[in-house]
Amino acid sequence: MRTARAFATAAAATALVGLSAPAAVASVSPQWARPGQTVWISDEGRCDLREGATAYSGAFGTVRLRPRGHHLADRAQVFRHARGTYRVTIRCGDGQRYFDRLQVGPTRGAHAGEGGGLGGTTHAQFATGAALVALAAGGGVLALRRRTKGAA
View 1 (cartoon, rainbow, N blue to C red):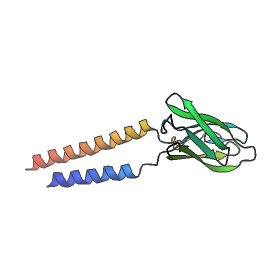
View 2 (view 1 turned 120 degrees about the vertical axis):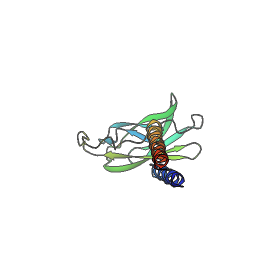
View 3 (view 1 turned 45 degrees about the horizontal axis):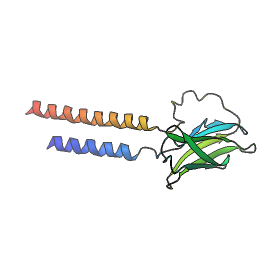
View 4 (view 1 turned 90 degrees about the vertical axis):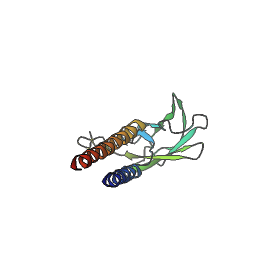
């Protein structure tokens, strides 16, 4: 009975972590830009290459993304009058949308100490995190099973 309860708790925790993961995001690089600077926009392989995609932001208008290997991407020039934080939306040909943000203004130097939290989550990062959560849940279940067998 304890094992079933531990397994249910581990499964619920795993589901909660999965549901709290950020929504898929577009990729804008760099995420801090000066007015007039060129930024790189990519769908990170989320859209169908045959259907195409466009990117839109108040910082640079609309840009048609082009095939670049296994993803759609292109450059956009930030408007000279742009200032502040802008939402960047990539709209795939099938209607799916992905988002990121672009901060426009004077550069603030290096983002030291932020732990890389300014970028989007890649498929590889998400898969690695999911694998680690599953491994931890499985290890917890095994530890509880051993404790239960040893106590009996």
